[in-house]
View 1 (cartoon, rainbow, N blue to C red):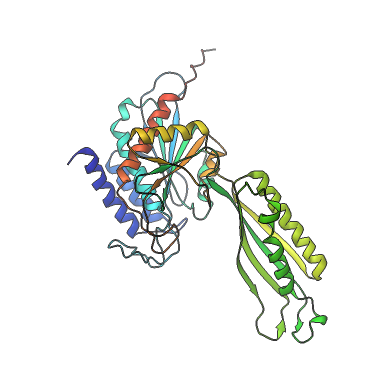
View 2 (view 1 turned 135 degrees about the horizontal axis):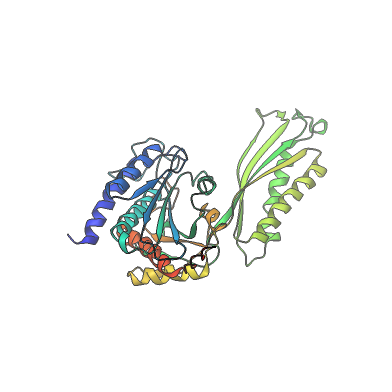
Length: 391
């Protein structure tokens, strides 16, 4: 068995374990313990992250003179509250929980990169930090890691995601935004209830909410440049208790996804304006609560080109990117340092977040090699400032 096939076999074993033991956001204690165990077994140093879950590790190379250069590789580790229906022999053992977004593939790939980098530790001209991030699905994990201050010395960061619709081993990467900004909104309508036979004595919150929803659905078609990309979805509605009573209130919730910050601001402003307008026209009070969860990804153009070139050097086909309106809190790191987020195909018969999603593990070793190569290239490419002369 050659080195590549040996690594692939090892990674597939770890991948199956992670897939069978999914844990939700900020509950990834068993996952974190397993990651530490694997890293310790191959001699990779782990650091104290200071969070309930998640792991931060480090492969430290040799000093080259001047300022030490540190780069980071990131993988997310949490699962989703989905009952698995993949039919895999290594399906989830935790009922109602599933790695339906490929995070088992992500963390296994990063473990493989750690193994490869550790073997070259003596020749690495700097330090690679390995971020096994909790709670990406909870859209809070990246900020928690950033707030520790343990990445303050990182000059560049690279993150990997699976692509369900790409053939196994294909890579897609682009400059700029490839994942959307995520905003969550809640609509609280307070009316005046009454008898359904006497609506003229009430201020019907159901009608007000319907007016709001109809108007909000026109934001994308009438307030967004048709050459831009944006999504507004109402995902839940609640009101009333029976058929012959006009209720006192109504509630709806949804999300806005955008790639452009100006479009994001315009849509959120328009949403609030619609709420005020419906309040005036309906007699009900409409309040809009907005939660800004994460910005759009912002891939550094130079780093995106390096990812594409490195993938081709490793024999991994690079395919055109179609921006994804799903969110990704990797963008939080990119607010602090140059970074790039790219995808590796896993050829799933079902999309991400689907109960029958299957990540083909065949490209694991290739994905690990790509991440390790990107880290090493970065360490050799980033200039070192000369040491300051003694005062």
